[in-house]
Image (tube, rainbow, N blue to C red; front, top):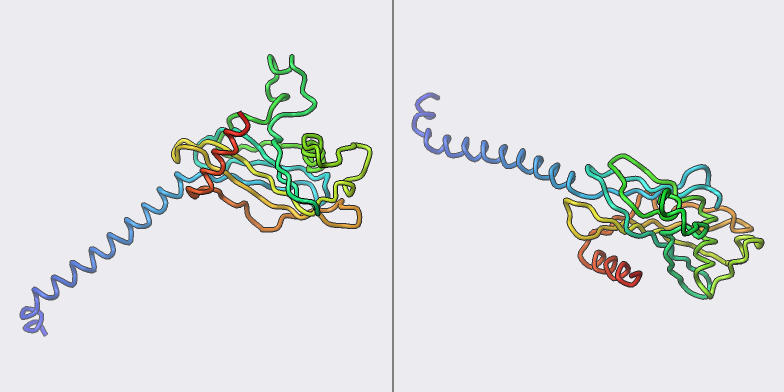
Amino acid sequence: MWQWINQNAQALSFFASLGTLAVWLFYAHLLFSGFKRQRKARILITQGWGQQVDSVCLISNMSQEPIYVHSLLMTIRTQDGEYTESITDFDTAQPNDSEDRPQEVTRQGPLRAGEQINLGTFRSLIRQTGKRHKNLEHDDKKPIRSLEVENFKITVIASYGPEGGVVGAQRKFIVRGDNNELMRPVATTTKRMAKRSARQHLQRWLEEQL
């Protein structure tokens, strides 16, 4: 056996080197994947406190670094079409509030890693979108079913340092129940909008709001 090993030492050394290289490449791949994952923005859009339209919309930053929220959009789909409006600013804000309490004027701003913001109830966000769009009924005294909402999407447009440019997150919800008073997300996770085409679309949205 030793004689065979001595005779094939060069070949065995070659294959041992290949095995060592494969192990190092495997660990390098793991390190690179972890590094790449840490550099990605991770923004969650969740529904808190039940499955009714009075549940609250939460935006959480699960990235490794802070993000800056530029804009928040709601897209409502009805039988007549689809309508998108900004819900970044509060409708009830007063001009003098921006001096001492900017958080009571706008939902725009930085969000540190591990933090979340409460956008308010989905009912209030739907009402706000209705008020800003001329084709949607927005009488606060009427029930949500008067808007004939079939589903809606919440979109977050933000900046994240490691990725550069804008990144986005989006989640779709279905409105259901006899009076459209119940809702649930379509998917279990938030859609990450990081592809080049999606980021270009987000950038156009921002430019349209200037």
